[in-house]
Image 1 (cartoon, one colour):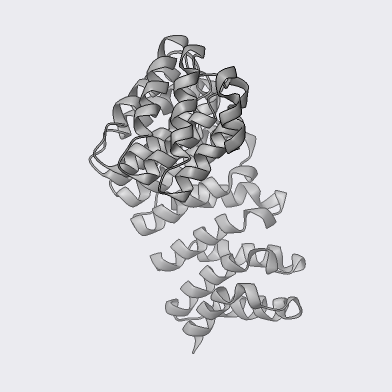
Image 2 (spheres, rainbow, N blue to C red):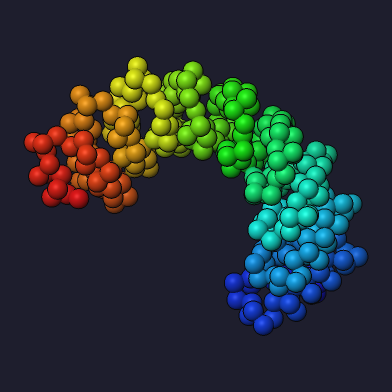
Length: 331
């Protein structure tokens, strides 16, 4: 009975009465010490699912037990334990930060990719507890993981790079951009899309030649046959704030073309992206952009219509005088 009970606690996290949170946490701690790894594994997972339902006076005990489970001889248990550490980032006491990060980095080198994958994910979730002295080590390790032989690990590593955006030092940015641009060439579409999304996440940090290289690559990728790639490119372009003058026209022209894409989600993403580019759209192209967005407010897809309308509101400052009444009637 231990295994289904341990798993049930995690699945029932949203309905556990506060008055029973201590009893449930106690039960899971006991189950996580069971001699059967088939019980320890779901217990480790459920502890992470409980999150803020764990009584404050039991936080340390839960975290210490998860650290113990990170050394379990069964990879499935280690995987659930490190995953839960990431989910419990908000309750980790400051004096445990260093130990949690060190243990997560150890598991990021586990022989089993099913452990490395949640470790890569946990690193991103633990961003707010990474000691200043460990930031570069963490960043270098997650960058190494983006070259892992298993695509599942690479994907999680890329996601975490994006989440660690705020702690990336300037002297590491070029190295990271080079790596991300290289991974946009990956044969696996999942990795290609993850790379684009990470470029989007760090887009506000890009300047100079790095920014130019990213813009040019995103424009190139926006011609991809896969709609998910095209959509991701449109969204990423919309997050770039430091586009140089010589590329602004190319960027806007490409988004206008994507607004006519056969796939509704690409049109939706392109309409949204244009709405965030008030400082990018050349004055000479303002009418064309507004015309396109007005036409999208009649799109058959409601999401596209909504995004177009919202973008018109965001761009009202560049609406030509001759079009103000038309736009006013829409927004």
